[in-house]
Image 1 (tube, rainbow, N blue to C red):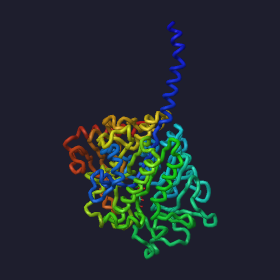
Image 2: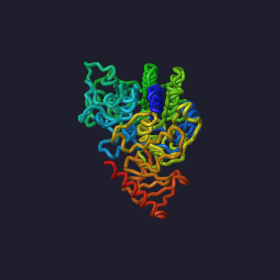
Image 3: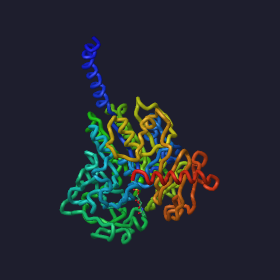
Image 4: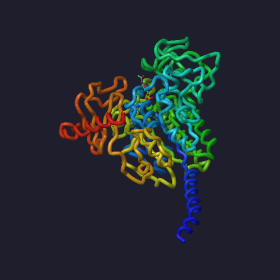
Length: 507
Ligand code: NG6
Ligand code: CA
């Protein structure tokens, strides 16, 4: 009798479990990461900026969670992006420093990426905006042929990218495997050593420049701005700096529109507010803070456009939107664009010290907002310690997809924290500055002794280097002014040991 009942029930059970799985699959949320560039903890109004107003970014804080202790992997771009996409600390791998504009692909095709995760789960995936993770084989890309490997070999089905940075040649967009609008009769050549071609360069023709640049940024002049590196050819393919943010935003909107019926993952790496800061003329003078402030307004407006298209397609409820930045803020990053002179009392790093390139907290502690209406309670603030490196393991859990063995070795599964169900984040995280590592554990921060310069010349940037150990209590000393290493030698020992252990693990 019992057995018979079981037989009768089995198909029903199978049917219900099948429908649950089916429901889970079909309800998988879309995921949009708006990954801004060089935006500091204090650069947006929801994090306390008063001299500038960012209503669209603030909307994400009102409708989601604002994290106060969330970290980019590194205080520069290439390693941070590497960490976010692979879930591996970049300092474990050679060649993950700031990439030249003609570097080969840094992530190898057999490495599992965040985009692979979504693609495996049946999502449509796209990388739009700044790439800066190298393209092509070991010798770099063939700009006039098929540019690969690149994002399309790393899990993104569609890509529309700025190959490196807006201040590096070649100043062209790459769509999937091709330079957009390339005239085959005017092939591109790129050099990061000696000048090539006949186009004017910054050192020889300063009179052609719209802004003065330092020596590194005095290569080929394109649209009145001298860049890092030299390029020849490709004239019809040049991007337009003033419309760059709008162009890539419209590509992002197009991708969302085209995929409204599928689950999609959009990695939208908007180039604002990286140098050269050439926001669209409609923002000129609007912030009262010069080009850097105007670029923040552009970033905010284009973030708003992404949120609006989700609203208009009724996708807001089922889309996770993450807003963050790849590293902390910098004022003069090679061009005299008024960022220093017109700062007007604004504090780009908020209460934290340092910024881009630095081991001090403003280097990696960045604005981080997550919204998923209906799932995340609104207007929450979370002080949990999280890293961008944790996205891959956490997203795997959220979309109910397995990570392959050995994938994302440093990524911690913190989905409950990301979704506001728990405040228990990491206990420790390694922060990477341009001159080495630091570690945070339970609000204690340790920076090992380093012989490097304390200030980065020309940028007036505190790097966090000192020839002696540094220990800070971040709870009571957010600016890292009061070195407690002598008072707490045991803490120094513990944290130094922990850093060594993490460095030696998982190699
Ligand atoms: C640096 C550049 C800086 C910027 C940075 C990359 C010099 C002196 N400075 O090497 O202007 O391009 O690289 O920025 O060349 S990042 O946000 O992409 O890491
Ligand atoms: Ca950056």
